[in-house]
Length: 395
Image (cartoon, rainbow, N blue to C red; front, side, top):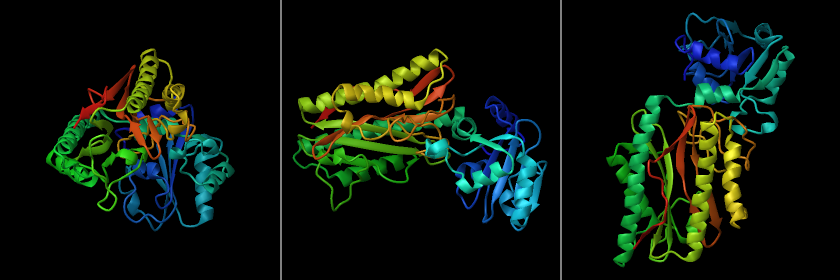
């Protein structure tokens, strides 16, 4: 959401619900992409920028005298204080925030680094100006990370397309293995990219196509020099993420295939990972339906308990899920995480994220199952419509 006169009432309602006097946005040379996007910063921006959104009344900008250009999207009806020197800047800031409680992109103790965008020195300046600073985490969720209904629909289209491509890719690999001429990882990756293009999808890297021991590397990407053949008797992991070429919203999924009958150990790990995924979904669905506040950290704990109880806890080495906001695949909204970070942000309507527990047995194999979810009032909407339930056995 870019701040405008049309959506000011929505932003101010969110500020009022956060029980602060206002939201103080700060950016300097792209340090805070959240503020830059909301203000609409464009062009040459080499000086410090502040924008204050009050709970009531008219927003105020603080801009440098030589850089009016970056403010071209700032409504003309909203005033700006112009400064040249640091004394003027600090005086203007004090005039705006003195005696107020303001939200900023700050996380106590860096507990949620995705919203910890304001330098410590700027926090000292704002506090020195007479303000009390609290985190803007919930405001970021409401006004920056959340999806519109149109974006949900665009995501759903992409999600169903990439699910179909993933399943077709696994079958393609199985057919090649059965014929005695297994396809290489990087060549299957290229085939997936061709399918993306044919379906009107785009991606910025990947996808991951991993077989055998490579599946135990969560961020493996194949290349011709190191790729393995996708042969019978192996586990195949495909992690693919794409969005529509025009105004798309990311969809991100991981699918698992077995080239031939899987071993008992592979099936055991798959069941643990799938059940952990579903435990997170169940917890969120129940709490949202009951109207209870719930965090991504709680969902992470629910998934992690399943894997730990099955004996694979030390091999689940990442968070359960990452934010997918309206702009980025790995976004600034809430994550499902009480392992890498202390992400206790509430899951508010409109936010979206992946749910992707995994078990990685280095040197042997890895299993991950990934779906996406969007929070709606009183419900959790999961994509794709038919998540993977069982290993796809082929070849």
